[in-house]
Image 1 (cartoon, rainbow, N blue to C red):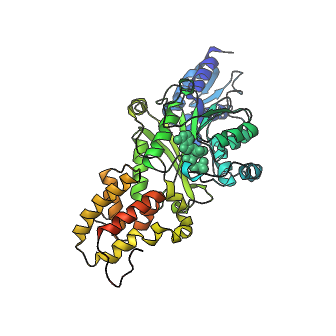
Image 2 (image 1 turned 90 degrees about the vertical axis):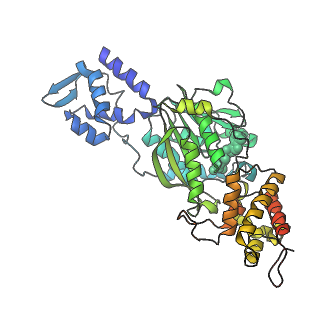
Amino acid sequence: MTQARQQVQAHLDELSVTSRRHRGVLRLLREPATIADLVDATALSRRAIETLLRLAGPDLDRVGDTYRLVAAGYDELALPDDAPLAWTGREDPALADRLLPLIAAAPPPVKHLDHVPATPASVARRATWMADELWLPGATVAFIGDHDLTSVALALAVPDVRVVVVDLDTRLLEYLREVLPGAELHHLDLRDPLPAPLVGVADAFVTDPPYTPTGAALFVARGLTMLRGGPGAVHRRGLLAYGYGEQLPTLGLKVQRAVQDLEVVFEQVLPRFGRYVGAQAVGSASDWYVLAPTPRTARAVARFTVPDERIYTHGRQSLEAEPESAASPAAAADPADVLRARLAEHEASTVRAAAVTALAKALRAAGERPSKAQVRDLVAGVLAPAGSTVPDGETAPDGDERLGALDPAARAAVASALVALLPPSSGRPGPA
Ligand SMILES: C[S@@+](CC[C@H](N)C(=O)[O-])C[C@H]1O[C@@H](n2cnc3c(N)ncnc32)[C@H](O)[C@@H]1O
C-alpha cells in the first residue's frame, strides 16, 4: 500500500459519515476526469476535491487537466459500483413490509412520553435515506429515543452499522432487546446528564423528539454530546424529525431557533418526510432535518442547560381525541368559547390584562411554568378569532388549538380561571 493511499484513507476516516461523495470521487477517478467533471458529478466543493487529489498525488496519472488513479488499493476506499452518491427519493417497500409486523408488535404508544408512531414506510424511508446519503460501514448511530424502531430499520438496511439506543421507556428497551439483540441499549431520562460512557461514542444520531422548543433542543443537545470528537465534530451528523402545523409558524420558528441556538446548520430539510399514525395537529407529518455541527457547536452545547419547564407537548397529538373529552367538565366550560362569547360585552384590553394574570396563575397551579411570553401568546391565541391577522402580519393561531396543546389538568385549570374571570352574560352559552 502506498503512502499516498494511506493518507487518503486517513482523510476518509476523518470525514467519517460525510465521506460518501469523496469515495464517489475515487470511483470516478478510475477513468480520466477533470476537476470540473468531479465537482459536477458529486457537488463537492472544488477545495474538497483538490485536497483529495493532493493526498493521492503520486498515485494519480495526470494528462492535461485530467486525473486518473493508477495505483492499486483504491477500490476498497471507493464507493461501491452499485451504491448511489446520494439519496434521490428511493423507497424500500420490502423493508417497510418487514418492519410492519415488528412495529405492530411494539409496546403501544404512551401519551405522556409523546409517543406517536411513525408509519412503517416512513421508518423505512429514514433508514434508506441514511443508507444512501451517509457512509455507514462500521459506523455507530445513536438513537435518542426510538419508539419508532428506526434503529431496527437501519440495522436491516445496513447490517454492518452499530446501533446505540437511549430511551426512558423500559418496555421499548425490553422489546428492542428481543428484536435487535446486537443493539446497545441504555435506560435513561434525557433530562439527566448523559453518563460518561455515552459521551463521544457515535458518528451520527437520530431523534424524533417532543415537538416543543425545549424538548427538541434537549434531545438534539444530548445527541450532539454523544458524537465522537465532541458536539462540534463537523464531519458527524444529526438527523431530526420535526413538524409543526402550518397554522402555527411561530411555534415552528421557536423550535427551529431552539435547535439552531446549538449552532448547528440545517444542511437539508426534507419536507413531509415522516408520516405518523395520529399527530393530526401537525398534519401527521414531520420534516427531516439534517443537522451539521459547526466549530461553534461545542460551546453552545456546553452552555446548554436542561430547561426546568416541561418538555412534552402532552395534548398536542391528541387533538383528534377531543370529541371523547367533550363530556368532561373542562370541555363544558371551554375557555375560548367563554371568552369569545363575552368579549363583546367587555373592554378587550381589560379582558386581555385579566386573562394574562389568570392564565399564568392557573397554569402554575396545574404544574406548568409558563414564561410571560408564552402566556401572552396563549392569550393572543385565545382572544384572536381563528385565522385572523395579528399586527406583525402573521396569521394568528386558533386559540382552541393552542389550548389543545395543554394537558387536561392545565386545560381544566385554565377553563375555571377564565370562567371566574368575567361575569356570565345572559342569553349566551356560558359555563356549566
Ligand atoms: C418523544 S417520542 C416522539 C415520537 C416518536 N414518533 C415516537 O413515537 O417514538 C420519541 C422517543 O423519546 C422517548 N422519550 C420521551 N421522553 C424521554 C426522556 N425524558 N428521556 C429519554 N427518552 C425519552 C420516547 O420513549 C420515544 O421512544
